[in-house]
Image (cartoon, rainbow, N blue to C red; front, top):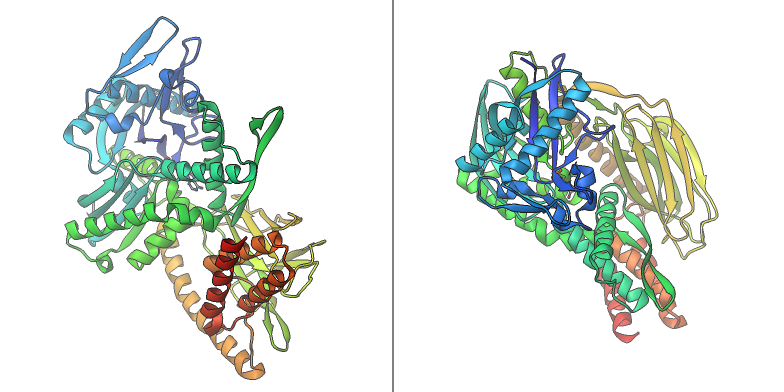
Amino acid sequence: MGRTVGIDLGTTNSEVAIVENGQARVLPVLHDELMLPSCVGFSETGQLLVGREAWRQYAAAPDRTVKSIKRWMGTSHTTTLKINETETRDYLPYEISAIILRTLKQRAEAVLGEPVTHAVITVPAYFTDAQRQATKLAGEVAGLEVLQIINEPTAAALTYDARSEETERVLVYDLGGGTFDVSVVEITGDVTEVLASHGNNRLGGDDFDRRLQLYLAQRYRETHNLDVPEDAATQARLLRVAEQVKIGLSTHAFVSVREAFLGSQGSQALHLETEIARSDFEDLIRPLLEETLTAIDRALEDAKLSAREIDRVILVGGSTRLPLVQEMVEEHLGQTPMDGVQPDLCVALGAAIQAGVLSGESVDAILVDVCPHSLGVATAMETAFGIVPGFFSVIIPRNSVVPISRSQVYYTVSPDQTVVVVEVFQGENTRAEENVPLGSFEVTDLPPQIASTLQIEIHFDFDINGILTVTATEKGKGNQGSLVVNNASVHRLSSHDLAQAQADLDALFLDEMDDVEAMEAELDQLIEVDATVLGTASPEIAALQARAEKTLAALDDPDEMEELGALISQLQYAKPNAVAKAQEELEDFLYYVDQNN
Ligand code: AMP
């Protein structure tokens, strides 16, 4: 018997994983890529293309390419693919899936250097018997003996070391490229039961891309007074840019877009040049995410459970990397989702664990690399008596799974400030100086601005080898400074230990919040603080400030400029209980300007 693998046969991407020395790992399908786009096609010369190459030609040659075949599994829907100018070929859904599975088998064999003969394949919990049978058949056609078809949420739960003797209820929220489903699973020892499952098999990251594509087209129209050309190739380019921007916004607060030669006017080439804030994008997709929360409620209702009775929440699927998804799910369910396994690899790893169990291998918990200390920067607090420096603002919390990228937006504290010093620390103390300094750098030549309105995005990128790269970018002119720390360390924890460490950290952070609150109260008393600027602002306020700044730059009436400048400062320096009023006054003024200019 050859090797047994676990396969996540996804709508958008598929992965193959194995258990080796007790550890599950996803195998690369091409160079270091772990995901194979679930896309099949024929090139112009009639050559079979599978994965990235087929995906690339989809926009230009939809008659020679097929994607998202999983939606049709178990039906007799026929896909006709053009092979060359005179020849076409008809495929049933399981035949296309068999091509994808065969490719995964071959790539795994190339990496392992031995035959792969058996597999565990995952399917959505809501798949009917016909859909499961079609998936099994696809595996057999691909040359694999299918040991078991398991539910995706069950596989996801397995990666989190859930085989405890006590009954656990796990909610698995799976948001991929084209589908969404939420399942409530009950696990007791080796028995996993899906109590309820709901979803929408027409909702996913592709919809977010399309919304952003329209938004980018609108920005282009505002700049050039012309529409983006309608042809398929240009629209496909715009859609690709939209996806890149979306992915960038998962780790950055702003993303600059520069797509050259998108259209033309006479002989002049027209470019798309704009900046998208995470808050703009979030406003576009929030209504879609609200639908997913309704599905959670329905699944809980069907399972006859309340949110409080859920022991763990697991996020699965590439789209759950969006910070807004994490925030909304957390707020809705009142608990932090598990962190530790990459959301788009989780199902394949679970399938491999099950494959390992069925083929008699001993399987440990998955080991994950985490950063052992919180990482952040020193920030200042402005008071009536001047700036109080030295607060530690955490950007990457301790025990975050690496690799990880996070960013935060900060503001300058002084009017006409032209230099920002970024001091990087690791540690858990709320006072920066009590932590370990990792280095510092400056961003210079900042454009002088009215008090405290200049935004600086600080981006932390912590890789698997413990290399921390910190980049600070000033939003106006784009000036940058950066620092690379080579000696930050990485620890390995089992997923079980990680869950424990995260629970400890949550408790620690509660204590620290008390510390911060006590410290702020003390400051209040000592120096009658009349302005509190911790350097960060809520996303809503940051968006309002960004909008106000933009408006300010476009105004030419000196009275309006002065008034707007004053309102921006008022909001910036507002005491917590005056923020809402300052926000409202600024919003009203911006509305007035919009109506009158
Ligand atoms: P999946 O079906 O799980 O492979 O997920 C694919 C979807 O995840 C696509 O829509 C991707 O654009 C999206 N995706 C992948 N990485 C990210 C990311 N970092 N932030 C937001 N969406 C992502």
